Length: 393
Image 1 (cartoon, one colour):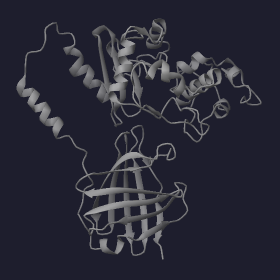
Image 2 (tube, rainbow, N blue to C red):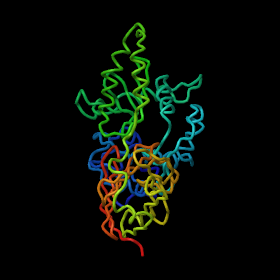
Image 3 (tube, rainbow, N blue to C red):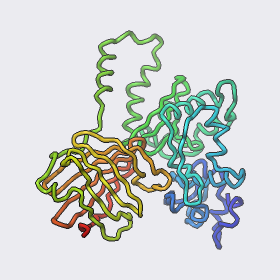
């Protein structure tokens, strides 16, 4: 692996780093004990190569998003193209995958192991391509022998028979229970391929208990795939399903519509003390006595304004709260607000084409305000440090 990055190698190269192969990146067995950061503002070839490699590569499974970044970096070194541009005519266009997005690191190299977004229908196409051994509409897009190697067990990753994270790992595909395999993204973004049942399931989610989603497939769907005869009509069940789908909702913020202090707070700018989130100020803007608010934030010199409704969601656009603000400045975002107490306004924000909701709690005390934020990222709950501010004069 080192041969691709001679200018990024550390001064003292360990024997284990010298032994790391491209294959070890593919099977998540790079030899790291701890997963290196894959943050867009941190990850690079130079950063990856200085991380300790205490295990002989190929012998120790450790899920490693930074390793996936390194594969993208290798492709860029070899071809002169980003992996995104390389795949466009070879994969995205033949599959008619429309407008995929892929975040990059600070050098412009696609993150590869995170930050790619496509529609559920599009990831379903990718699963169908693998079900068909790499063939699509008469064209062999991926060699069939690669599909076979990528989707079979290349390394062991545990021994729990009921865990879909312990069934073995291929080339960036997880093996599953019941002989299936899957592509797997944070928060429950799944392509599950059941080769023997000629079935692909694609899912977009935003949750932490990813096993619970897969269990529904194994407990409810999978047994029915073995039936030889079609299911009998069930109009009552169909109607109940349609009704349930029609009434699905994400709950808005809970609390009162207004507060005795609201009039003193609306349309006033509160300026925050210096902080590492680069939040500079907040203003709750309203022109209808608080029936609808616009949350206006100044972050790192840029203004973000998000409409928020009471007991309903209002849609707008904003930068992505969890970083990459410059790369994704126009996220579709919905907002809702309520007063949890006379001095406390809660605002729920949801960038609803991502799995990332954020809860803001603003607590006012005369001319002072504190801001707490919980970003309920599917892989972990991120509670930001409390920010303090004061009304601008």
